[in-house]
Length: 538
Image 1 (cartoon, one colour):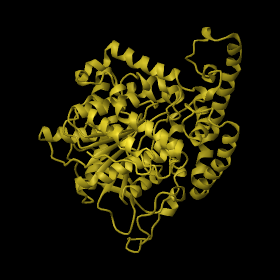
Image 2 (cartoon, rainbow, N blue to C red):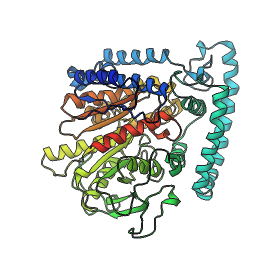
Image 3 (spheres, rainbow, N blue to C red):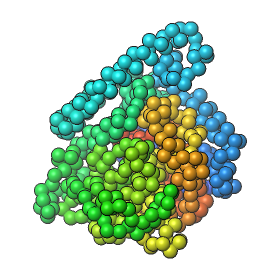
């Protein structure tokens, strides 16, 4: 356990007193205030408020997640579900929804709207709007494949990155001048986040498909070029003469060297699976693929095993190269391994966990990295896989089925860890979350029931309802206004109740996985610094 305090805050003494009081009342959830080196007075004030809420929210949000609710059934009682739903609904009523517009535009586009409750004008507009969106959807279905292939294969990555940031540089001052702080969830968020909200909010009006989610997540590295971080991180080393071959990072948009991994494993020691417990798989299932980022001339002693997210429907190692490299650099120049894993609906959640476990054993037994030098980092659904992996390692040791050592710890960014019927923030916050909006929710959530089946299977597969005893330290970075907030806080509370060191950092009014927007908004940069401060200590 550790406790960091900002050094440049004008009210440092008062903050120290507040933080110490929090640490005493919540000894299991340790608060790490964000660095304020680049934060102006307004942001320092916002940071102070967010820091105070950081630990208290772990108890206030999960009112039902006390010791008495360690009985899993308590989380599915009607009274508890009604309580968390009402809390999320009341929170929504205090927010600036729908970009501050007087009308909810989703009422004109969504199928599940009760038209009898709409005004005559809205009902009249709704029909042509839905027809236009359907025509646009059909048109995109015809042209999106060739357009995406051209964009991703023919247009150089460097040009895509430059085009993205030139567009943002032009858009931001225009938004500041014309709209300012009127579109975000709350006036206190940065002007940059207001601008991001105005740009991304509209995605909820259009139909989302698995193909479009996969296209979008494969392009994440476009938003994380090296020069976007030059103000606050530096490469670990510029001496690449000892590499086995010249650094190829530039073509991947990073400064380090990228090793494409394709390795046939002979055995898998840790049993995994919900349908049935398995060790080894078929010949083609025992292949580890992904990208290994080497930051400097020699492999680093400590390594991050990066598990990407995408609701188990999308995501790949290539799209995460940019952000993973930056976290590795900011946490002391660590190498990063980003394995690929199988996605649903083509595969099962069992298969994803199998692949992630195999990747962890690859680091230990093929690359010779000591387990205490490996830290797991999971993003969204990747946070669920990270938690499941650690739980599988502990369960195997308790049953004497294997003795694979545990990693040094786990970092969970907006962890998606509850696969049962959505409730609370998961149900209510889709109204304003910029990532998991109504359209993404409608496309992704039904697959959990299709893949996992009945309620009992979904409970058994959800890491939030499994045992945390024996797990290494955890770090959770989450927004109080993102869809997975409730389940992240329940996870923190249950892990703390079972004796696990848990560090929780919360931000107000941010969207799901907001640290991924570090090049654009200061809150995202604060989130990355919070994560990397924890990594340096572990």
